[in-house]
Image (cartoon, rainbow, N blue to C red; front, top):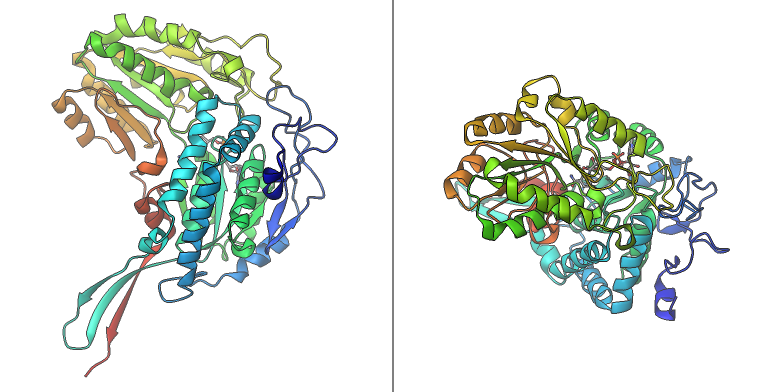
Length: 517
Ligand code: NAD
């Protein structure tokens, strides 16, 4: 590593990580970096199966629980306390953004992300860019503006009521593997901006990325005692949360629906959730050949970028019959161009091949279903069998199948390069709307049509938190310039924008001054 990088970072993504001095991830506790005692043995390099990073396998967590007491329920700061911290955090963002603008630091994070979550260069760069622009957005005074309050005149002289944004205090953040930089960094900074002190846990397969970014934030002036960072198994984190459920005032969870629901019960509802996405795209009847190249390209991007491991990935595509003849061959052609060497397609980190095979086979048993593309394992690779390696795959099922007991099976999120395609006719649009009503997850959606009435009808009757509409609509999108998150659930969290931060990370407090005469 170049000397500038060595000043800040401790892990070298350019070196073989299983070399004599493997990259080692540390925990951060009460302002100190702590080396692990036991390390994870079950996380091989996703591209060649070799031993990889040293990631702590923390099982003794009592000090992390004790540390939750260090932040009072009024937070590290609030509009009436330690207000200089709003400015300090703005300054940390400004300096970090400046560093992230430097070519070698930008490349460092792209490479580090790619080593642990293999995806294409442009997908890795996208994540770094979103993070940098987010930091730029909250440079200077924009952190304090998040905590803007308002006042109303009272009933008599001396009375005035004011609404404030108040922190929760000690909180917890759990992040998944698929966006190792963007998700934890944006949520952690949002938590800090509003005055909270988080205990952070990122999926151990990729936690090195957040750990190294934390070193950059500390280098840029973030007090190291502003948060704790633990590397442990999901199950251990579950035990930690159970034991400290009265100390944790809010958990922000990003990950699967099953774990989210479990933790919601343990914490008696003190949770904000970004969970699974069974994301739908519907292509309207207004077929237009001059749009088909773009629509096909966007479908391919939405379904298969990052090997389908985006929470916003297109899980189901409702295609109007008018498009079928033109679009299906294009989808087959585009999928066939994805190559492992470019990481346009690659390892699937949470589904194995037998699991994906079983799901595909069970959907193929549905009468009238057929394989449209893919379905086979990738060849000529050294991806270890603990991870999946599937070609971009699409399976067509008839719309009638949704009226049967197979509904649940068809609408299960497969976190890999897999989508379901449904062709519908004008007469079947009511049925499509019934299916959308029954899908339990409401994260992202796309209405691909320039027909204003078609758009209006679907927008008015659905609830997805992030919905694109228009002929260029997509299901996957960059979070820092628009709200990203589910809707239709009082526990929904958001990420990226001022509204997302304010909604997720602060609550309303009203102070009524009544001083006479
Ligand atoms: P997961 O729920 O298994 O893991 C997510 C995180 O939770 C990891 O850090 C994991 O270690 C931790 N965890 C697991 N069990 C736990 C427990 N019992 N207690 C506490 N923590 C625990 O999810 P995954 O399968 O690895 O991630 C993919 C899922 O995440 C998909 O369903 C995807 O749609 C979803 N996701 C959603 C968003 C969003 O913004 N809505 C973003 C990214 C991913």
